[in-house]
Image (tube, rainbow, N blue to C red; front, side, top):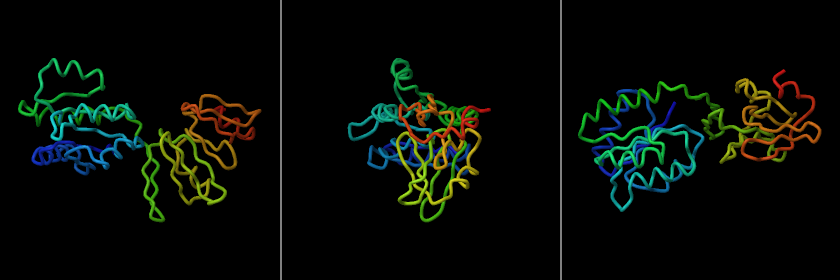
Length: 232
């Protein structure tokens, strides 16, 4: 499920937006902020979840929604941004392409109808929303499959380490059980490693490594699993 992040310095507007979101997605997960906080910064940095950001352009404390959009696009080009604005069309045309904004909606011009339409349009898109979900030993994870690069066994801690472009998560689980929870883009390329084939750009079986689309080289490739890696 897509997470919503609402940023507005008017509490009434936040509640208004939340109510509209719930009309479209009854069980939507919504986080709200009135300004840039460490919590908001942490949410922006967490790119393992797809989000819809609803940003008021004019905020207090000399910070604008444009500033927040810039922070988002520094790390995340997949989440959607909807601006709530009172600015003219020239402002919209200037900033829409820079930050790949889904829409600019005027607060006092048919706002409710247009906002709900935008949410429905975004949700109709064919997102790859399959997720790995884990909840055990006081650890709760929800990670999109597409963001998982590879998974390997930490021999010291005897845990599996899930590697994404920005984080590493440790879970207590046998590698065969992990493999059963994933889809067919994941293969066991080594006795102690599972890799997302869609994220691999180079495979060197002679040297026993693969190179990911992030540029990382991982020495956990076995000749025994070549057929799986080559989709044969």
